[in-house]
Amino acid sequence: MDSESLTLRPFRVSDVDDLILWAGDEQVTRTIRWKTITSKEEALTFIKEVCIPHPFCRSICIDDRSIGFVYVIRGVGRRQT
Image (cartoon, rainbow, N blue to C red; front, side):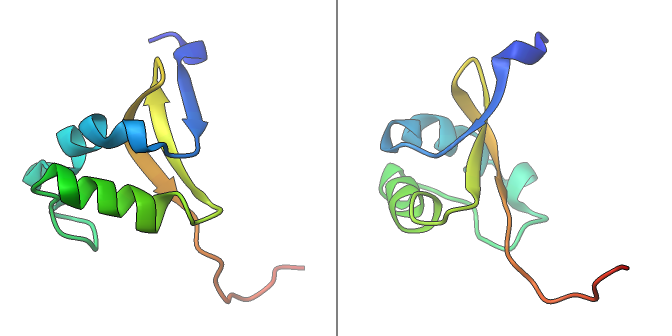
């Protein structure tokens, strides 16, 4: 894989079909906190209500096709000095 083809970018509504491929796979979703997406409508809702509004949710892409995502949540922790 060419590292230039791997990118992080904000989600787009047009990612819906790609999202269904990986978020609709129970082998992928069995270890995460949300349920497997089973329809295009659920995928669109997830993109519109969770991914797009969140400032630190990014689609992991190869050749601009979504293959996963990263979601950073601000937390409380002990600061290292």
